[in-house]
View: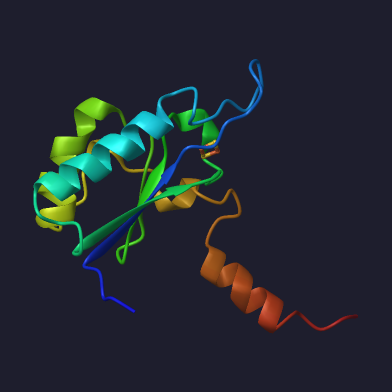
Length: 127
Ligand code: FES
């Protein structure tokens, strides 16, 4: 198994036209994914950074969503115009692009997921 420096998942999920949730396909997800791969390859990063298409990341209303690991930084509303900055700043520089970042507290809608896991592992006693 190769050890990639970064792994990027880009949502390309498509919903029927008029869906109230929206979808990344309608915002250009497939184009963003293809362009990111092309740019990474052009920079010689093919075996260094892995970019994979993904289905819904549950951030649908934000425009094209993607997540970069190992940092676990989530982005929303990503367009073709943002890719050079994402590559330069985050993928190569290790500095997340704050203007596109989805705050961690807004990702799940349940607050702190680590606290939720702790609650599930150690439920309060029944009366
Ligand atoms: S359709 Fe892309 S995050 Fe849901």
